[in-house]
Image (spheres, rainbow, N blue to C red):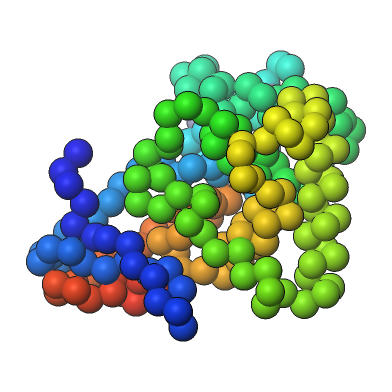
Length: 218
Ligand SMILES: [Zn+2]
Ligand SMILES: [Zn+2]
């Protein structure tokens, strides 16, 4: 892969951002990677393939959890490393199904526990994301506490206690990051996203030192 032409920066008033570190041509591809984690959201479950996110009338079901569905045996095989550990959790919590954010964070945690960092983390890692906990209302915080409890319950087969989580990983904080994510600029979604694949950043023209973040905002 070519060296990155964008760099991270942070400012006190606006938080994290990306800016060009070399002159860029219009339409130039700046970065491409699979997201750290993604999952099919409730509305699309059973309608699109869990791996490639394409819709198909007849999908094959995972014989273990009977939740994950795939368009082909090839997608099922490719999706297995990401699905393996959540599969047991999905199976154990049946007939209930976790909230989308809980399933998504479960997938993210599994990735963060792997020895080799994910491709997407070359640009921004999960730990770089702001949680902005101090800006949350008490109601929102209570909602996040509930999600954190649901997460622990959902993952208990694979992560029976919090000491097995990646070092410095805090479940409550992680949910705050994931929640803010949905309101963040689209390039952030490269790291962590639901199956909303339509909003991939399109960069039109960037000059040296300009903030890429601004170009990517909707
Ligand atoms: Zn597929
Ligand atoms: Zn399964």
